[in-house]
Length: 154
Image 1 (cartoon, rainbow, N blue to C red):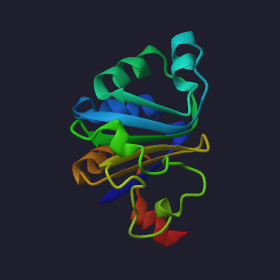
Image 2 (image 1 turned 180 degrees about the vertical axis):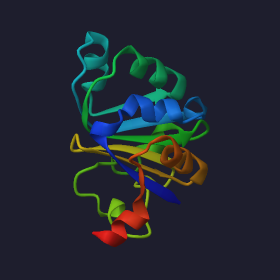
Image 3 (image 1 turned 90 degrees about the horizontal axis):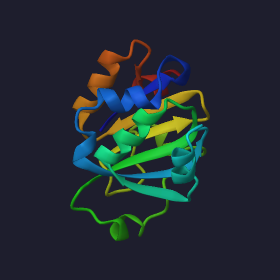
Image 4 (image 1 turned 180 degrees about the horizontal axis):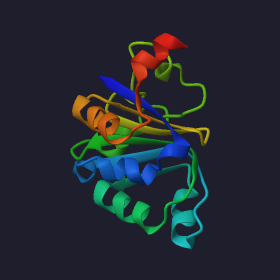
């Protein structure tokens, strides 16, 4: 498992998803949602306790508008994992989850393989069992730092 931390003002959630090559291979659970879209369709979609969406549809929605995310946890699940199975666990959340800030870092839902987290409008965290995803983000984002290394310095 590998993770990175990026200052939010240096990159957007949209760009993070554009850097990830396999978003459409997964279904995504979005929880702990606090965002500010201007588009009415987006505002209505994200005004829910949680959202369950196929990767290609998530990319389409995010391409409509590059808006601010204050809080949000995007959890990726293999397509064979059903929503009913996912909802047997607590919703992933950003504020207060200790697994981001201690090593080894962890993903909240045991069925998920990746989490992208908008944290307090100031940080984006990416944690994945697929180390290549995080390595690509660190390469592509000048301000990305290895999360486990970061945790050792604070």
